[in-house]
Image (cartoon, rainbow, N blue to C red; front, side, top):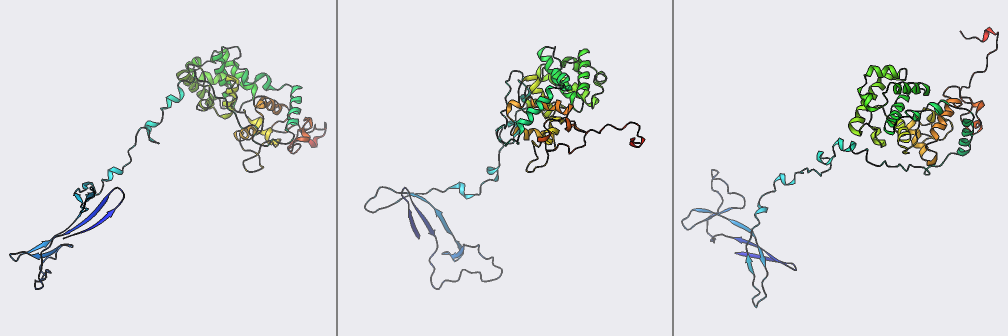
Length: 386
């Protein structure tokens, strides 16, 4: 017998049919349950009925889901049944259907990342990107313009080593490509070294014909060491000069990188040197060159502070970021030689000459650090230190 329950939706009518096949049993028929413990109980959902020869046969209940379509309405309002069983639903889906298949464009795939060489090729023909900086976003310190004007006046009356022996003067008589390599080499040598020592080492390299990528690559490392001594860490710098020369030959045709990012990939080149090279070699202002003098003086003047506090910045790179927040960009290039010379002559690392400084009344650190000792009295043996 059939029990039909039609479900109507606007475009489709579906009927779930339940068909039960069984044999009529009389009231006096025996029970279909097992009569002894040795008999195997029937499967759930399947009962036994007796056939005409007296043998019990299983009764099967079949549940069929059918799709039907509505035909044109007639006087009997009949339905035409279209039996169709979805075989795909008869078994669970394969777990592999849900597996993630990585393609070359998938995030994190190796194929999606460009090879490292693509980042280095074509630098010579590219145009450098000018960094706009963060000037104007931060609040400038009070009286900074008066302080800067006073420092300029003091610098104009006294010459500093940076004015005649700075890195930007290296290789000034060489062709443009060789001059840029000379600026890079001289800037590398200047780290942890006084200007007059760096200048002497660069002159010896130039006199030996080694201030080019080709000559530096062919030179013996021991020869380079002897020529640049006594610059700080001369052994390490000699190795780095050899490595840089080979990279410049392989990647840039003997020239130097013309972007800040590529310069920072060279051995021994940090942010301070990279910004200096960009300004001196390419005339491209990407940021402020902050060395130990600029770092020290900006903290003494209270022009920069640590993140989220009023304490001093701990590194030159932190000082650069803080300074770029408020210093107008037209001051980004001259601020380095101005403060470096000021730090070499008056605002020295030890015993700053605050008495000779015309802006000491505007400096929060004035006379708070050890000043230059006063002249000792002659003839007094008690003043001599043993």
